[in-house]
Image 1 (tube, one colour):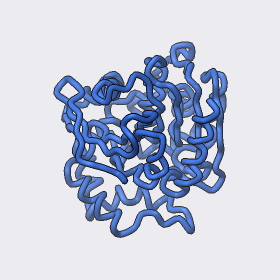
Image 2: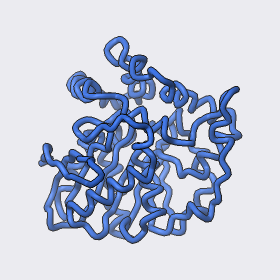
Image 3: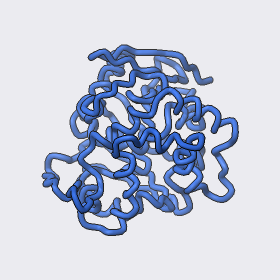
Length: 296
């Protein structure tokens, strides 16, 4: 059973809403969603973590029922990571297994890098480590084209654009990569998403605006202006990467070189899955997470 309507004051005036499942005395596991979702990115997954686990899936700051500060600077990674730390303190979790996707994945890479004492294991679904992502955004024309939407979402007034025609553009993120035979975006689910989007879009878009990782344009070098030291982005916790290879925005090339950045790395490729693999194959993803956690 999934329980919602829980809140945690995590400091700096931020309040996070979260869903939970399982036994509060059992092993802690946190699920972190991305754009344009909310905690229910994991509603197909959480039922697999009701036994021997305490599973928590927050709305990230800027989304749904969590605090939605308007300042772009409020969405820099150090602020987001402080939310995760505050949520762990609220839940009295010393260490936690983290499962994350999209922007949640981007934040979780940084969390594991900065706080290996907190992140016991890391499971990432279709979210690139910052080093290969910067590499390909800076120099790979295919990745630049695949990520061109990021510059649209960063632009002033993007809120109006994505809300136009009853959120047609946001639904396009889901339907544009809909996998045959895996029609997870049902009318009932669509109604819930529209309700969530109606609570505010600026926070979610500010993740794009706050990040230095975006494709270059004629007037802005974007990621090409960055010089990142790989030694400062090393991941020292056991890490499982699950990658839907039919993701048109984040192709499998982003896995190249990852083993040089992660000390203890397992990669599982899902050839038919898209960016929305957690919705398409929740049982397979859950089984892979259980196997990884039991082995590590």
